[in-house]
Image 1: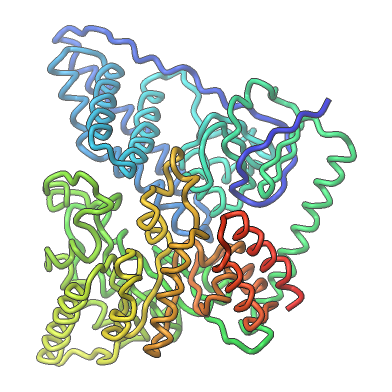
Image 2: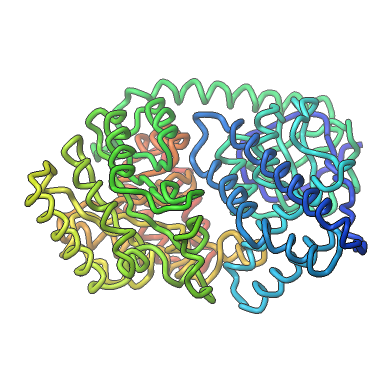
Length: 583
């Protein structure tokens, strides 16, 4: 008999395969007393486990496909940085020595301390970071247990559908490397790390089906629809035939999208669109070229600062930027200055952890606030950006601006840098456009004033939505409130687009919403024509938008904006998406 389960579809695609139930061995955290004589051996044992966990993460990172979006490596790098942090690399060793207990017990004690500290802050953002800490600590505990099941090396997973309680970023990358057909987890949400990685890697996935491992057996045939969030166990022949038909249609669609490579991005009624890529590292450029993107709409530079003991020098910045410009061959490169803070910390002796611990890092000293408070971080990057501007077209994008005083401070520093370069007879583009990330509600409300001082605006919807709605989008407990259609969110987006049009400056969007097929027609109807997204979403977005007539969408969007309830909004959005092909 067939069984049907419903969860949250987080990564589109349909899959058929035998179920593989991932049940890791119970981790033994029993406390054992040690003699002073056995402490050095226990410390060595702990350090070997740390090294083994790190090797597992590095192996996962090395197996990331070259054309995978940069957020894939970002999650892995975060876990590597956590392993290297003193709270995990040093503190458990101190506990072993001080309390004469085994490594498992010491690490568990440190876990409990971290949970207590994070929990006492009553901060949703930090609550989600403890999930990462748990993933990393569990990987070390498994390495301490030589008999525990390891994820890496599971070649027999090819073509199977993995069913698990949860997956780490390393798990997800490993599964993609071994060719799994898809995966299902009992926990997680639309914006969990697992979901984001599944979308980036193109793995059909469903999360949030509690206790599914009680009802599914290893080896059972499963079908998975990552769009509808539906799983079928032991499907009938007719059901299997339908899924295989869908798979064939998906392959045909991918081939059809490939034909759009050289098609101009213009709507039916002649509106020219710009479809740019978001990138983090140089390797992302290969994927960008494969989809013929209109340059880089967001180059995140934080990873220049990561996993190192010193701040990157001006020359290091300059070499990286010029290399990217050479690869772009004349296309625009929009460089966001370092958006450090919150979950993006620097390593080593000169890192930000020497500062007092912020009660709420997401709203603390981060982004442009940090750069303005510490010009030694900011000025070398600014100099490198302007020096690189002599080698190709560059736009400079400032993150996390909240008021005009910050804008004026930045412009003053930029002018100082330019004057210094003039005095040194260094070539640079005097007219490098300077823009603002609009990701704080205050900036969106004051967008008209920002537009009068700057050359362009770029809407960062990820932060804008979560700050507007006061929720963390990757916290499973509250992410159901993360709603891009909330009237307040749409009002702020529209206000920013209107401000740019009134002042005659470009407005782009580089948040996740810009590449989401559910919302791109809505954004076009709001007046947005400049979209920046992960490279793997560009052709799909192009296909969606060139079949639209913006004049028609404007009328339909106005009806959505005037809707009085979420149900009416969703109905209007469905109407916009359903009728687009008829425009």
